[in-house]
Image (cartoon, rainbow, N blue to C red; front, side, top):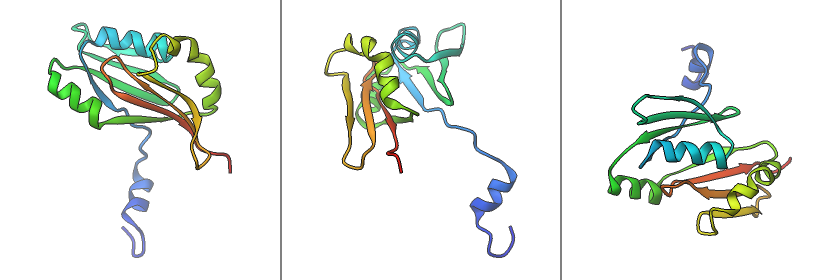
Length: 140
């Protein structure tokens, strides 16, 4: 590190972080894979033969599903953790998956809306209650 150079600047010159994948505990990986692919339009990238792990993605975003047979941990995840997915043209994405979202019911979906700061977003809960935010930054 050179004088006046921040740790972040030094690290940026050496390596780039290319993404992040939230690890989401689920009751049944197969059921959750179906939700992420059939409802949200993600692509299954890999899944182990035991069906206890899966990696799914859509564009540059990805999510890891991990089988966890612990009701307390699943409840804590649903109550205290969430993931935010930044989307280019969130209105178009919402329109694309709206027919599938309609079948989930109002307790699992908050339709597309505009926040006071101009950001558009919608919310969806996965089959185990994990809260997913999909949003787009307001235009400058």
